Structures are given as C-alpha cells and as structure tokens.
Image (cartoon, rainbow over all chains, first blue to last red):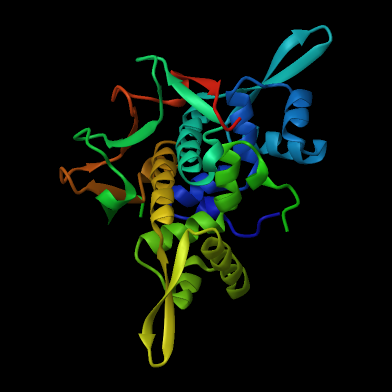
Length: 149
Length: 149
C-alpha cells in the first residue's frame, strides 16, 4: 500500500499519478482502449497475476476510469469498458507513445502506428495551445499559481 | 524491485512507463522542470525519504532523463538538470496536468496555470495531428502494427 497520499496534493499531476502512477494501470487502460475488456483476456495479454489485475481493475473502477458491464446474462459475464473520464485519460497514452517512439524505439522503429480518422494519414500527436493553436511544449510556458493552489 | 521488464515490451507506452511508471519519478521531473535541481530542496519539497529520492534520481540519470551538474567547485556541489530527452518527457506532464485539471481539481479549480510564451494567454495543451493539424484524441485514431511490432 502507498503511504504517500498523492491524490491529496494540490497538483493535477500528482492527482493524475494517484490514478495511474504505477505501470500496470496505464497498460490495463491501453488494452481496454485497444479493445480488450474481459478479465481472462487482459490477464493473458498482460502476463499479470490474477490478484494484481483484480486489484488494479477494482481501483480503476473505484476512481471512475473503467466501468464493469454485463455482456452476457446467462451465465452473467462482465467486461470492463472505459468511462468518458477514462477515455480522456487515454490521451496521455498517445503522448507517452510518442515519447517512447522518439526516444526508446531504436532502429526497429515504432511498435504501433496511429492513423488519424480525420485525414487518414499515419501521424502522431503534437501539443498545441488552446488559445492560439501554435505549438505548446514544456519549454514554451510559464507556470503561474492557479485558483486551486 | 520490479520483476516485470516493462522496458523490454514491444510497446512505447510500456517502455515509457519503465522510465516514469511510479509516482515519484514524474514528480521529481515536475520539480526539476519547475526549477528545483538540488537534492535537499527536492527532498524538502517532495516530502520524500532521502533514500527513495537518491534511488529515483540515480535511475533518472541512468536512463538519460536527468544529468548531474557541478554548480559550485569549492566545495563541489551538484544539481540535477533535464537532458533534451528529459525535457521532452515533460510534455507528458502538461497532458497529465490538463486531465487532472479537468477531472480531479473540483470546485477549487486548477492548482497551476500555464501561460503560453508565443501568445501570452493562459491556456492549456490540446492534442493535434502532425499531418493535418486537426484535433487528434484517443477516440480519433486507428492503431496499426508498426515496424517495431
């Protein structure tokens, strides 16, 4: 159990890490996002113990990222699906993938490509400013205290 | 010690999590990015044990995210600074902050605001497509196997 309460810090990064701040939760999110919602499939694909998977899934449901849905009633069977909150969290995965592709993929190149529905091109995410539309990277901003500081 | 080798998986998300897949490493990155590079300051700000901080810093240096720089020679004193690879990793923090602001900040609002150098506005990051410039979220793409699959 984590003793430090990351979710109680006045920081949106720390609070986000309280939801996905260990490796399995983002990978579960990745696989549910990619279409795997059933416990046994997730367990097999991830090569994770049933105990750890059950704990992580339960945590993600509790935090409102996943929901458990009945997909068959006789016998009752369940799968996990992303909530709206969970689907928006997947945006972070795209940015992680981009960084990993750039810095850790080596000569083999990106393991996964992203094809954008709107234009049909294989492309990657870029970060832009909600106000002016220009590029907005970590180097392009000043940090100011906000109302929730 | 982690037994699962996330860095060896053919997935840029898993590989990225091998670098920052626990809560402290991204928070150390956040504080170094925000201007705190000295061990004692980091330790105080984060409220982390010296042992855990030393381990995480050493891991981040080993993975090429931070570098240790001498800022005073008599006596020799060191601080941690972001490498180019580490600075690009901070882009992920902007996207984490955005999600945390949206979903976890509550009525108090965002703890930190981002002012964009290029336009001077307080704004947030949006994800756009490198090919067409339109919005590109997790819901807007198909996943295809890449050369490194």
